[in-house]
Length: 479
Image (cartoon, rainbow, N blue to C red; front, side, top):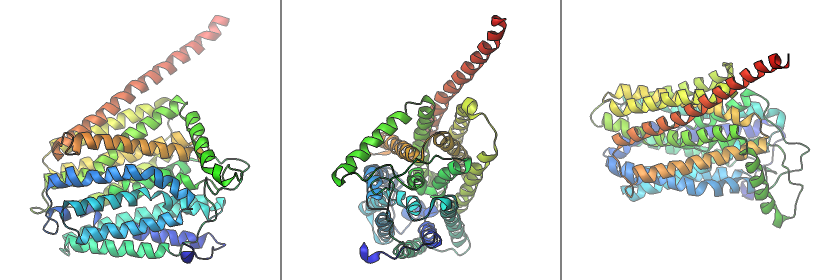
């Protein structure tokens, strides 16, 4: 990598511009909203069963296998090599999409896309190792915003090209390949960081803590920025990895660094999850994110089932663009809502989980594609609202280093749950359910989540009421 290393700039502007360019071109992929019509059309001629039960599960499995090793490797090699690896994986993915044929080739596509999503951790972590702390918030907003803009732009462009220019889905993938290739070339110009969060950290006098709602909101926007299957993603880990300027290791001997890091991780996580409040919010995060990623992985299959792309006009690109915008608005709106989240937060989780379950039941039972689109918009917006609240509730009382680890573990647990769902519901070695029945199962899954947190919220509200009664009666007894 030394040959690719460029002299570090004393200004934060240079690495920020390069990283934003990488984020824009890596997300400018107009083929994403029309992946299923492309695979089921004359270019690939794959059946719904092959896509649902044989091809798409590979992404979940590869992502699970790669996530933790890449999480550790990213910090150890100081981010840039992993960003380059992501660029290479992007290119391989779209080359296979364009020129590969058959189930095996598409399974390889899903494996390399699993590599892409696992390496997303480096994108948001990188910038915090090359800029000073006073620029963190500004740079974070730039990097997240550019990915959101790129995905929305790509979705709108795709819809216009398909609906107005009648362009083939094949050429949408050509545009995507060109875009991710430019992203890889841009990443070569990133300066190589001299430090990282854990393995190459400098001594620090104190650990930073998140200080504002804006910081927590930024965490949730990562997931939205990597729309569609990118929201299958590990973005929550990605942002928080970088937010620590200096580490806590006082230059231990090289052979002891890894052991000390892992021991410290274990101790920190044990202490964090000893808090019941954090534990329950993390439980909702993991359960809901697993279901959310599963929906995003198979929603286009459902749309194609409700309105086959070969026989009707489809508006996947427009729907994804609106959903992305709606999710972002919902996430930002949290900052202006004044609620006692300690008392009513879990009730909100229960209520909106009911909304999620209802929208999924609507998508299952309706035969109207427009109703199906509407259900997806409601589902995605409500999830983005809730994940923002959850991020804030978890992060607000943790040091930056600790909430990086908590978010990473929560995401990993979510992926484990999603893998279990995939094996049981989707995989041909499991129940091998058709796509329509799958969404009935997913709706029931969110209904169970709603039930769990409704019971928990009622318990919290009753406990608080009883405590107030005791406090009121105490003065009269003393008199």
